Length: 79
Image (cartoon, rainbow, N blue to C red; front, side, top):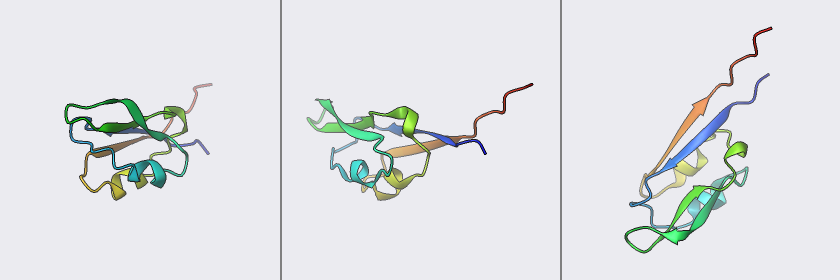
């Protein structure tokens, strides 16, 4: 069975860097960026994008709803 891949999109300017999503991620995909957004907060980003399964834990726990998760089912290789 093919592994489902995910992608996390964070609204950088609205992220407060609360770090809740980072701890909620079971595959250690997210981290806080060293740079800051316009409000001076370190924002969440995909530090390990290849590990994302699209589980949506990060989006569910985000108190400001600034995370969107996309899931993509890998295409089967044509023989």
